[in-house]
Image (tube, rainbow, N blue to C red; front, side, top):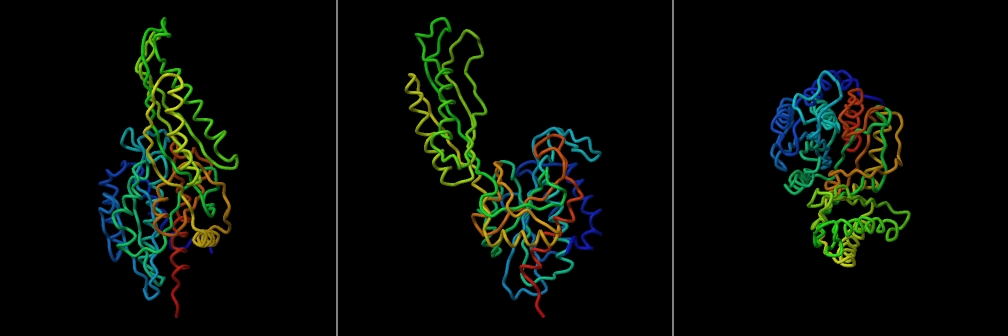
Length: 389
């Protein structure tokens, strides 16, 4: 069965919601307008419960089916926050706020879940409860973790959790998923290298921190090359390298480097951290300097659960006619991972067409994908919690 007729009728209305959100992006946890719009709409739809302020600025809506005897409770999640990017999409509903932009499609995700909420509140063709989760701060703020820590799963008795994300490069409305690791973990490190600064003409009287730090950069790459199974997936990147001098004739006293570690395997994540924390100080010592590593864990690996992945794929196939069931994993991170650590569930990609990638200033969510996304959420509810005579 393709897109629900009612959702096709609602398409222009949902598109208008999406474009309004796009024009008025908000960042991280600071979502007063977005959160209020979501809460007001859920209330107007007739949700049985609407609770703002979960995980600081998240919103939760609850819809009971015509029956609840099954005792089943499914949670559906959408992220609401934008990015600190200057928009260059050229659309007539572009961001009104310079330096803020919905460059990852969270406006589309929010509109899709609102559309599904309106449909489910109207029809209630299921036996159980749907918990609608509108999450803040996916873009680096760990809003998913904040909502879980604030009691999201226990307070509403959530048993399974599902989410979607648009994916440029796939046909609009095409779904793709895989069991197991779908997106990478993302950790950050800062390395401070200290030596003895001095004049560039007298290097023998210094401990050259630029040289020491350069050897550390090279040594970090040996972790992937010589400590990780070649079939494993680990990326170690030094993205920033700053000396405490900008003069051409000065040997810096201190260098600060910043980077990231990404992997699809929790065990390799542990190994990478262990090797960085062990290798860096010893490399600096070998060249007469010292180095301190500040390693911060970020989002964990996004791991889809087997049963829920198969079910999510079946629902996607029902909506779209086909589904990619073994899509290749990708190395960006996603804080829906925290929800999948708390409850079984699945995360699926939905095609956004031939558009710039997410986080690009010319990116724009394709509104033609809205009916498929809404229908997928609705199908999850009605198939997992079917009404019986």
